[in-house]
Image (cartoon, rainbow, N blue to C red):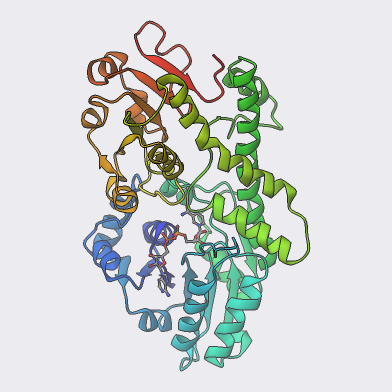
Amino acid sequence: MRISVIGSGYVGIVTGATLAEAGFKITCLDILEEKISDIKRGISPIYEPGLERLIRNGLDSGNLNASTELEKHIANSDVVFVCVGTPSNEDGSIDLQYIESVSKTIGKSIKDSEEDIVVVVKSTVVPLTTEETVQKIILEESGRKRETVGIAMNPEFLREGSAVDDALNPDRIVLGCTDEKSKTALMKIYEGHTCPIMHCDPRTAEMIKYSSNSFLAAKISFVNELANMCDKWNMDFERVAEGMGMDSRISKQFLRAGVGFGGSCFPKDVKALRRAAKNDGLSSEMLDATLSVNEKQPEIVVNMAREMLGELKNKKIAVLGLAFKADTDDIRESRAFNIVEKLKNENAEVIGHDPQATETFAKETGITCTDDLEEALRGVDCVIIQTEWDEYKSIKPEFLCNLMKKPIVIDGRRTFDNGYFTDSDVEYVAIGLGN
Ligand SMILES: NC(=O)c1ccc[n+]([C@@H]2O[C@H](COP(=O)([O-])OP(=O)(O)OC[C@H]3O[C@@H](n4cnc5c(N)ncnc54)[C@H](O)[C@@H]3O)[C@@H](O)[C@H]2O)c1
């Protein structure tokens, strides 16, 4: 089976590299020359544990190829995965420009061919998009008979930071096929997996993805609201979460309080679902609340800094962690942006630290960023932890005391256990910790 993956970003390159590892002949396609030339040289275009090794394996075995020649490779494919971005428009609605453009390219590429092809949408798209946009454009552009083009929606559930493992060992696979052709091809592609495989129509598959992300985002905001109450009433939300998590209906996952969710998926997907519902006259109060709680969380750590230091003007503050979560270099919608902006509005002097994401963050914000922790900590009045990188978990209290002007740690991610700094000179405050 010859497979093309269109869009070689987080989802596309992980999909391509893991399918190549499983033995399929994969061509990763993108319009960005730089990305493709990196992949061809065995360099991962993103930071993701284990990914570069898989890319190199794929290149060595000849199973993985990369190209910017979209039409040529699509025309020679049995299956095409669509993995391009689906960002937000100003009003929060889904921006389908890349989906539409790729659908046109697929249509053009298969115009002169008689061979069957299966097109699988992996990008996160609002319900009905696969049937009413992707399928429609491909058939119009190609002039092909419907029976010769298989169409399916196969949402991606990988988490950045553990994307390779998630793609190799998913919890579930959802196949929203419109025809037997796409179902047969996808069952062949996923035959090595032992997890449950759910079959449904494309719109159900699309809704499963949005519902899953919105539920997890809502859980985070709900937990954050509870943690803020715990702060006020002087108790540690982690203990509350421990008790909650013992209920198997609630589960231990996603019960950590913090500065809120960021990343390329939760914020935009909740906004897109909310907008799609509003456009059809449906209410979305849970989604509204999810987003509004999330917007307020970054303010809490800035307020903590003010309480500890007084006026923030000319105070030197290190923001530790710029990526939206650990083990990724992705800064999209990172809460670090909100925190840095608020600190700068109060004329604080801000330095950013991250093991992987300094370059892009510095470019977007203009603040000084470093991947050297000592440099970030030297002479600062306090640190705010925004990402729970392992590197921060192992920081020793003496290290902070020796380098910082004032050893004050404001933990926006509950990185440290309560009591970690007890016998030291470090002053430690955290979201949901109480006094
Ligand atoms: N990042 C995640 O963790 C994740 C997880 C699950 C689902 N998703 C969804 O998957 C989709 C892709 O997300 P991502 O994070 O990989 O995006 P991304 O921005 O990292 O990658 C998208 C890639 O598509 C390329 N592209 C754009 N237009 C193109 C075109 N016409 N032809 C070829 N390539 C083109 C871009 O150059 C880019 O490399 C989105 O819908 C997203 O919501 C993302």
